[in-house]
Length: 429
Image (cartoon, rainbow, N blue to C red; front, side):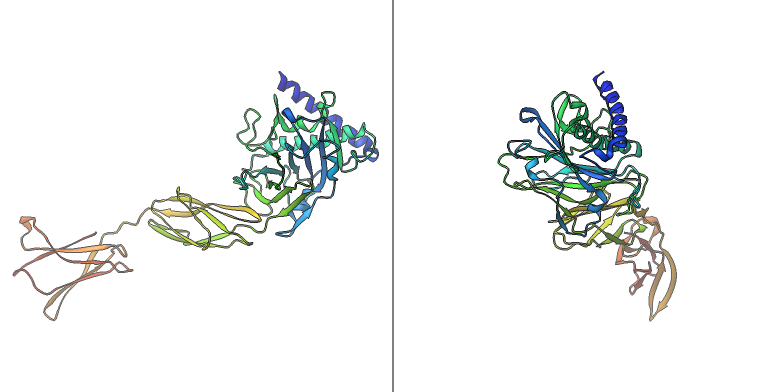
């Protein structure tokens, strides 16, 4: 029942927010455009304060288009808006950056999402998976409602340092709760959890696959970092990677500093690789060559057959596939600029091991010696020549061992027959 009421509120408020924006846009202190990113802050639980913060930090495409390795400082707000205007200190502050692509953003499919995922222990987690269009559509609506709520609250406040065209201080009290940031990001009954409720293929009970918010801890003396991802709906090509499914695209990372400044650093490079050969029969030995752009210190290869390799110096690797099948290969590169993953689905195709029966094709007497030869062996595998003077006895004696040539040929020269008559046979291995 609570969830149904919440959903009804959401629909009504989305419409009200739209009408308010259309009717009064010229008079509102806080304004935004579709495709912008929201930097949002709050405290919950025992640390909950009287306010929440929503800041429009500009078009998401501007961040994607930054040059590799570039760091920019976010200037759309003053740190004093958070401390001391809204909170007494910087600790236990929950923050995130979210956004969505506007239909006018060139080459970006509708319902593309931009979300942050906090680093844990200084290490970036797995890149979030892309979801179906309908799921990401729902999340886009919630992100739009964050902005719409800020517009509504801003329209009832006087313009000032806590209510500007790019930043608004929202009252977190129950009277303003229907319009607040927490309504659109928090789970029903648990306002401390932040995961857009419409997002994710496993979103059955309103649980998104990742927690979007980072949190500062006491003492807040080191930068707080959240990695920033672009999630194009499945079935649509990502303009950066060209892929239509799988993991999202790693854009870079946001960093909240102890002095309250927020910076964004564009990823220093992208993962890339090629393999040769990509088809053949088992066992198939493949050499993978790194083609990543940027500066990295770690390469994690996943070959698709349950085996992975991590190396920190030589980025090129070799791997042998022993069973027939189609294998997806991924490479995750990481360094000071963050991490990036490229997955190529069905990249290696291995057929069943070739079966062949060696055939005797030559018999000659050369210099008084018997020379047997043939073809159709399996290259580089072992063969043995056995001899017997009495077939009925079933006794065979090995007289020669070698490897089939690269073309499958073999030969054997017999210099001392065991008797006036002898039989020969070839076995492999």
